[in-house]
Image (tube, rainbow, N blue to C red; front, side):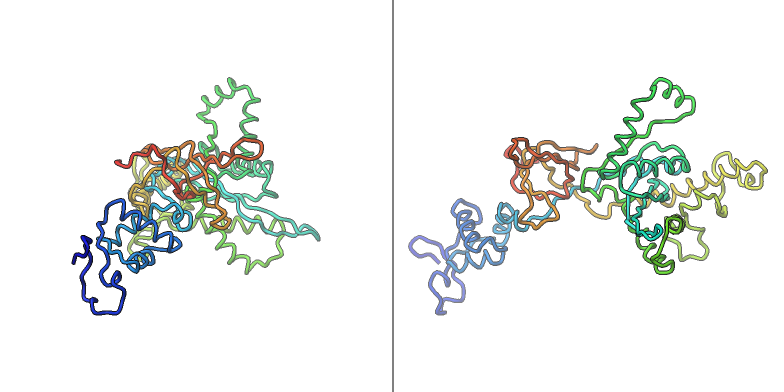
Length: 422
């Protein structure tokens, strides 16, 4: 219907006692400056409530927008206040696995490190705190646990030296940005700088050794270290069970024994469970088979090391056969399971330099700081995984600069230079 040149909605409520504007609201197109201004006005009047309350507020004032639900939803998604109040943290398509996770190198050639604890132990009449340092092989998923007396750099370096002495040299170590890990990396670099690099390089070339490369994940990016963070959770669940049987009054020797038992249980877990219920299936792979070399050979051997080598007097040929057997089955049974992306399957908008974001912290949402992106870090596929943020300006005039992963950020205002046609 049309009145005074204004198109209105007809409908079946013409005989109701409602106001004329509510019975016959003004019909508005879904695009246009007037429609956009009306939505903004009544969205603010509804105290930045959700889509349903905003639509009710618009229609109660005598306006009927074509495709109102979609238009209001799109408008609310760009509202700065709503982003601050209810905006979700960003995420990006799950990245490809690093080479460390896909390499058939000896155990602990590539490993991740994390600390856990504390545990209370008895030292005479005193109660002391002890911690665990877990080293996780990124390819075979085997673990090695050392105890430390504190969370200091010196204590961790001693645990690292014990690990290297028992498990051999390491090519790459990955960890989070814990102060003890960063301190250990700096201490090792400082110690290396004081050595004669020429002689060391010649020695390493003769022995086939390499420098240890330490790679740090961005701060608070625990999801980037899931390969070893998950093992910490496994250790905690096993410790909860063992502590019930071993009691709470532990000394240093009892704690070391307990953590070694935990290490053995974790290393005995199966890496694949697809056919674990089939009585005719072969024995599932476990890290203990590679570390202890104590398992039954159930498949034909690859390469030049034959099954008959298991009965040879030369022990090294037996060991080589078992190692080759493990890695052959690992490629066929374990590696193929890592191909699937369980979540984060589609690409999302990359953060750009100049974007204004909210930084997720442990505090209340209203206390999350606002920051500007000044630098972005992309992977080999061009996806932004972490960014460098500039937060405010303290009294001394120097801005605070932090590195954070994208899953800790909520987009607040897009950069003016962002190309929306991409």
